Image 1 (cartoon, rainbow, N blue to C red):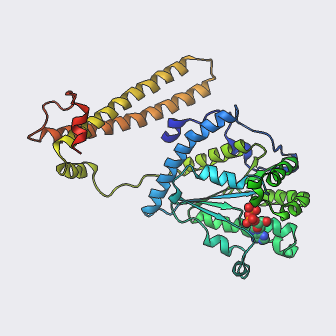
Image 2: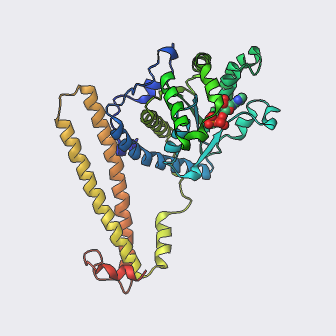
Image 3: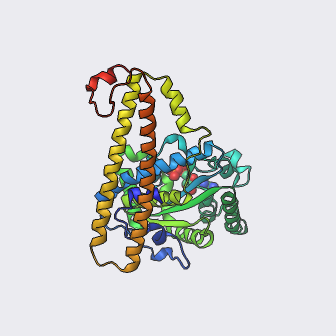
Length: 390
Ligand code: ADP
């Protein structure tokens, strides 16, 4: 898609979705929690790449939001699970701070309140689902009802046993109604959790994060691992997959989640809504209310943008030509790269054509003015002149 061409996916050697998605025979006990699968470089590069991906995520989120405002029914639900100290808070903070706050709805699920306990366990979940156009983030979720509830035997076995299928059906119904569901589990190692809990004890500014209950939960480590394994084996569906993230390196977990969210949004391909008005008509109307100086300034800005777009296009093409002449790629890679180049070029050409049309219209509107400057595009006016008049 054009958006992805514009940004590229950094030092990922493989799509993290393929590497981290829970597949047939997934074995949590054998899962390396300190690995950084698929990332070809280190932490600094990861930070830089996250910034770039954040911009793309932000644009995609805005598109989704605009779609929702214009009658669209789609939304994205991101479920984040993990044991204490796994980094759920950091993920939600870092990843979600990259998008417009009005487009995300964050909900944390703790011990159910008295009112929540009176209802079915999915009641509070349903009430917190993202509305159309939003990205909903769940910090803990309905999965607690087959995790802590199972480990602590808060209900009978035959009650929680039925929940896996029920959760699958529930998520299927969300998907059918237009919500894309992705689920992340942050998996920290036992030793790393010990270190993180110790830091919470050592640092007074971290004391608020520590609960004596954390040590009780830690003592049930094995039972939790088994409960998580059951979650992964029984509720990772094609429609709503689980991604299990090694979380000993916080930067990796954040990077991978960012990438997977971005790729998911790219697949959703949210579209800017089609306006119910014609751009050129409205531009003429607006121009009629503007002074000649402002109109000239607007035209000059557009001319700059056109020039920039043409120069950028040239750069892309030169870079593509260089890439094509390098290396002895296999023919499939070459063909794919060529197809991507052609697709990207078509998108850029369309963008440039639109800009040209815009420039032309503005030039005509300006020409029609009696007090139009003789040659507005060529004549370099003193910078202060036009601006000062605003
Ligand atoms: P956190 O520990 O994530 O910072 P809280 O202090 O609010 O957040 O703790 C959440 C606690 O609520 C966890 O111990 C979790 O197991 C518990 N919890 C969440 N959902 C349920 C549930 N459905 N039943 C019982 N306990 C739950």
